[in-house]
Structure formats: structure tokens, C-alpha cells
Amino acid sequence: MEKTRQELFELVWSMPMTKLSKQFELSDIGLRKICVKHQIPLPLQGHWTRKQFGKEAPRPELIDKDYNPIIEINDDYKIQLNRERSEVKKAAIKIALNPPTSQLRTPEQLKHDRCITAFNEIKEFIVEMEKKQNVVKFETIKDKPPSFPPTHIFSFSYFRSSRHGFPLYATARNAIRAVCIADELFERLREQNIDISIEFTERYGTEMYANKDRERLQFYFREPYTKISRTPALSRIEKQLHNCDWGSEKIEVPKNILCLNFGWSSYSSKSFKDSSLKLEEQIEVITNYIIQVLDGRIEDRKQRQIREQEAVRLDYIKKFNDGISQQRKRQLDIAIKESNDHESHLRLKSYLKTMKEIFSKLPDDEKKSGFDWISIVKEELNKIQPINTRIKKIKYASKKPKANYKATWYADFLPENYAPDFEAIYAEELKNYRD
Image (cartoon, rainbow, N blue to C red):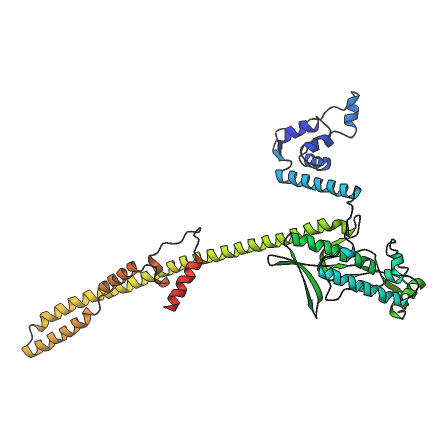
């Protein structure tokens, strides 16, 4: 959106800055900065209130009126971007005020084999933890809000899935949530033609990827930990778990926050976690993120292939045209040599004619030897005919204009927009190779 300096001055003094800035899809601060940059005087604070009572200050004169450039206030791209950002903020506020109701499936409703396996492993983990202490049972605390710092072993000890499950590292309560979330997420991704692959290596352990059209995105579930000062209660829980007390001043405890991290375990490029919305309430957002990343990578790969093909095309044209230029220069060198040969040929003919006249005046035996010598020279001279040789080569080139790449001196240069048929070229080269 464009306005002259004079037009913007008139607008600034016709309505409040907050109202005027909305017309330009700007903040009042952004519009104020533009005015200050172009030395446009602005109304003082309280000007519009005083004006309602007829007490406004007089409008100042615009400094340097002859200086009246066109001011770019906001372009269409920025306007659209600001609108999109505003919509995103409104949507985020709406979700925060009215969070979606979670309808997460229960462990008994799991469908994916890996999720079922992981849940069975969690149940075995809970049984083992209950054996370590006989005070707290998991059934009595699973539905209660988690405490921090931990007050029992189930909020302190981590479950780690085996290679038969999927990458998951969390306390029992969050591990069960993760299994249910993963089962729902896997199904939604499958509906979008995105496959889930889980790999195991001795070096990196279990790794999970979302795959689409040869592109992949690694992700895993994890509950992070933090270090806090050791207390007697934490020491007791630690001793229950490990049968010993490490005795350090700080102790690592889970944060009771379930995260879904994208990237490697040492570096996460993106993380979704329990915040204003629980992770199970963000499944749709997570699904859209995976789709967006994979589609973006697929598009990047296609664009990269297009650039590579374009580079190959331009390289082919350059080499072809360079070959023509080099062959044309070589033909000049050949023509110069042939012209020298032709000139020598003519001189030799003149020389032989002169010698014939001289030999004819000699005695018969000497004349015969001289004529025999001339005949031998002429016989050899007839074998060297630069003009006839060149004519033969021109005829051959006209019959097979593209039989040999080295004979492209006669061809036209390829234009920059030429699109070579590389498959046909390769097939022709292969045919010549076989022949």
C-alpha cells in the first residue's frame, strides 16, 4: 500500500493512530515509526480527547513540503502474513480457553501390535516395581494427579520399551498414556499413507520413523528428568529401586511431563509436550506436523532433482556448443594446412612444366631419364589432391551429419532453452557401442 508523504500527513491528523493503523494492517507503533522516519509531525498524547471538547492544539506545518516521496507502508505479502498470524493467535487462544475433549482409547482398545506389546511390557514392569516395595500399589495411584517431587517408586522409576515395542522412556503412568497416544497416532498416519517403521541396531537401539515416498522423520516418546536437592524421602525411594543410596547432593527425578520429540535423542528439532494442552489433545496437531514435514521434504527433493536436471541440461548444451566451437577452430587450422598444400601443389606443377621444357633440350638418353623422373613425381603427386580430398569429406559429412560427435563443426549452436532427450541419446550411444 502506497501513500505520498503529504497524504500520510493528512491521514495522521484526521483520525487516531490506532484506528488508522488498522487500515494499513499495521500496529500503531509500526505506523508511528514510518511517520518519524519521514519527518511527519504526529498529534501529542491526549490530542483526540481534547478535540472532543474543542481544546485541541493547532496542527503544525509539514516540514519541507516540497519533499513528497511515495511511501511504501505495507505490501500485500506482509498484509497477508499479518492476517495469517492474527488468525493463528486467535485459534491458539480459542483452544486454550476451550480445550478439546480427549477421547483417547483405553489400553484394552489398542490395535497396533507394537503398542499392545509395549503395554504388556509396562504391566510386567509394574509387577516388578510392586515387588520392590509392598506399600504402594499402582492401581491406587494411577488415576491420581502426579506429585513432584516423587513420593513413591512409580513416579520415580523409568520404563524403557524393548526392541519389540517402540521408542518409549517414561514413568509407568505416562508410559501407558504414550502407548494409547501412539496407537491413535499410528492409525491417523496410516490413513494419510504414512507408514511407521521401527528399526533396531546395537549401536543406536530402537528407532522409530514416519515414512512417506522415500522420506522419513524420526520421533520417540520420552519423559524428561531434572536434578533437585536430595531429601530423605527421595533417598528411600532410590534405595527401594536400586537397593542402594548413591549419596550425591543432587538426584535425578522425572518431571511428570510426557514429550513427543522429533529428531535424535541427542538433538530434538521439534518437541510436543504436556503444557496448556495434554499430549493426547494434540494428536491432530502432531499428525499435521508430520504430514507437513514429510511433504516439505518430498517437495524439496523434487525441487532439488529439478535443479540437478537443469544443471545437467545446461552442462550438455555447454559441452555441445563448446565442441562445435573447438571443431570450427580446428577446421580453420585444417583449411590453412590444406591451402598451403594446394599452393605447394601448384608450385610443383609449374616446376615440373619448367623441368619438362629443360629436359626436352637434352640428349636422348638424358631426356628419357628426365621424363621418367617427371612421370614418377606426377604419379605420386596425383595421390596428394587436397581439394579432392576436402570435397570427399564434405560429401561424407553431408550424408551423415551427426554420426560422429567430433564432426559437429557444421551443426548449429544449441539454444539455452533446448531440452535434450537424454534417454534417446543414451539409447543411440548404447547402440553404437554394441555395433
